[in-house]
Length: 374
Ligand SMILES: *Cc1c(COP(=O)(O)O)cnc(C)c1O
Image (cartoon, rainbow, N blue to C red; front, side, top):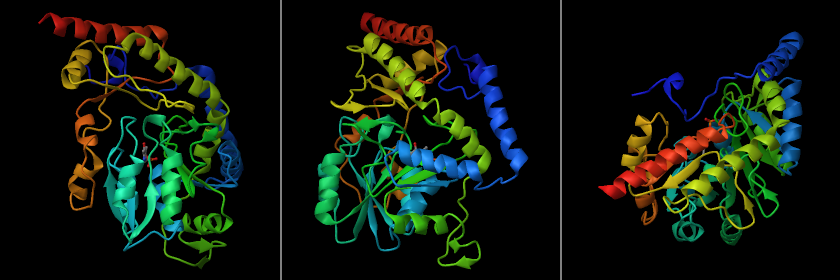
């Protein structure tokens, strides 16, 4: 059974930078930083913040050292803490729930819809007098139903903190992920659509008071480095990662286009065999993951593994089912508990060729041919 990246015929992800020109570009960006020596919060961090704010149609951006930090500090900047409840989805990487819990607030888990994103009507039913914020996750790189969520949030005076970690550049009706809520949070870890060569994250917003508070929160709660106005930890973004991200940001349109092209090739060959992701009318998904659904998920996964195709289940358990969160309030998971048993993520990254996608889809076709014959 293949286990190393090298042994897979089609690896799920391959983070090596094999293209010599691309490697050279990154090395020269790193070299510039080593020459000026501002290794943390240097000028490239500022330049990246300005560019990301513009990209997201926001006034301000604050670079932090991970997506988890972005969520955690973002919630803190809005005054979320002990005694508050924050309603979030049940299907996400557990960082989403952890960020809420680490502020001292209680995560409250909502069900998801067919789009794998939080169900706005379910959010409404979970609101209590303690609810302070909603944290939708644009899962797989698809923007949530933000119109409905924003209406509910306005009605109950709740903050909206977008976990846009998987959705850099995703759109709905000309509005971009990260620009819908009170604040938008991104992870820029190496796996993400816009990824660094290490840990990185970003928070975007329009309100100046929140921006000022976040500048303090990301650096031990200090103003001018010496005066501590509230307790916090160190969440600064390092300059080398920012310099690398600037290079990658300049190619982001191509990256998104490529991911969408790969997804369309999967769609063409897989529609009818499995449930393929459906793009929202008026939306542009960025396909951080390409998730198919089938009742025969586990058998298909094993079949593909034997064919050298590496797939993943993102995620095999709902956050609400994690041992750390069993005590938290939640909705009845009418959709999520079934969906989580059927989802499978196929390889989708810029290094895949059309022939790789064809190979994967041929294997899937073969699987269904064989299961039909039995
Ligand atoms: C990746 C991810 C995070 C965490 O980001 P890190 O940069 O790894 O801390 C949070 N939420 C979601 C939905 C993610 O996909």
